[in-house]
Amino acid sequence: MITIKGIVVKINSNLYKVDTGLDTKDYKAKGLFKFKKTNILVGDKVEVNGEVIEKVYPRVNEFIRPPIANIEQLIIVVATTNPKPDLELLDKQLIMAEKNNVMPIICINKIDLSDYYEDIIKTYEKIGYQVITTDAKNAVGIEKLAVLLQNKITAFTGNSGVGKSALTNNIFKETISEEGETSEKLEKGKHTTKFVELYKIGNNAYIADTPGFSTFEIKDVLANDLDKSFPEFIPFISECEFRGCSHIKETKCGVKKAVENKKIDQGRYERYCKFYEQLKEGKKW
Image 1 (tube, rainbow, N blue to C red):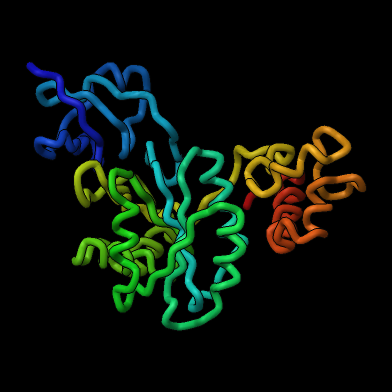
Image 2 (image 1 turned 180 degrees about the horizontal axis):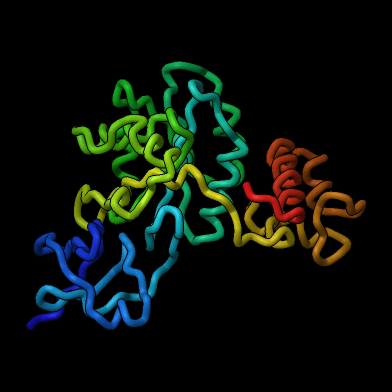
């Protein structure tokens, strides 16, 4: 039989739905994977032969909650109001994207409800992050968002109520995800692989329907490495007097000087200090 490459788009018990580009159907895992206790995840790139997955390719990244692999792009959705912008959560998600080699794009939704978002755009575009604006209710900005999804495996993240489901439903022009349904499942502690699925939106383009990205905890970031996840800090770290500077209590610190000179946003710096102390104390986020 001919070996074909594909991507796992859904897992249901011991069956793995694989999109090969020719068709999408269920496959079983080769016994070798079970013997080695190797978990196959949604997003895995695989080789199939007959009715069996024979090979899983090395992953670019891997997440435990939600259980998914090879996410290339993270759309971080922030609402202008209802709920109000949570910049602390936004920064945590940006850190996770940096840590896992995922391209982050900030999407400010509900621009019809409030004008409070220009400062957010200025702050994050100055750092180098791409920021787009949308009004999912009236389908504003959806076409631009859809273009960014081409040839990528993309996940949406953000607080409950920011409009993630409304955005994805607009992209597909049908109801893919019920508003509020996934967050309720997550709060009840029932989040399993059956709630993770990749929906195809074009050639080599998928959206991950997975609620867990809104509950990221940063477990693998060391306090002393946190500054590397703040791109705007990097040009000024060489100006610090001490190697391994925490940029908090030291007097001769290039980062603190840049904050004073308004080259680094004060709010971002304050959130860095808060995260640093939490990591030093070993607290979960």
